Image (tube, rainbow, N blue to C red; front, side, top):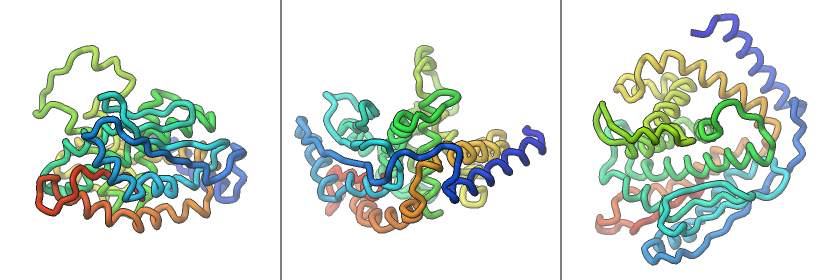
Length: 308
């Protein structure tokens, strides 16, 4: 456990960082400008992905992501792209471009449950949460690179934290839906059961294991709002032993985000973050509410839209 004096010092530092950021006098001097997000829909070569491409364009998915990320003050443009990846379900940031593969989006659709989950998130949220998470995760990589943000620890974990922190900036109901949807997306990648067996070389990956990523995002969320995410601990989705220190983990993340990223956020535009999401999410959620084989359902529709 962290000594009380250390906790108080971090809290004071966080308040100072927030104050300086709001006044525009934070340590880092922003050199970029907002509205630097571009986008490109690349038509898929695989006919199986045509429905995803069509629905994303019709739903203006990347346009909404562009609007949601517009508060970032970047030194040069960042392009969001959806494209085919020769059968590989992946996403990455490179050369000022975020690329999310149709194969990965198709996998998220395939992994979605046919019914809403008992914990209070819908089938649509188990798609929207992971899609939002992957775009925000890759945006984290882009921000670290473009703004030369120093990182202690593994960058993949830092990008996960960046994504979770931004999801928690949504309204409470939407934050809960997206966080739990993202955690579902990680859990579904692990073999079922309390004891699992994986190849040893899996531990060498630059990413944490899917179960670890799920626990990490739930811990950040619980640390941010113990009341909103109380059932996550009560139902055993996040072990009580881990939950004890989650408020400290969230404090550390808040301090880092307000100190290092805060000066590069347009505060006026950022104030509309939840408004953008609320205005654009309902239609996407309705389209994803039922599985593709349900009469009247939209086939294979994925919309990261209004969402990042």
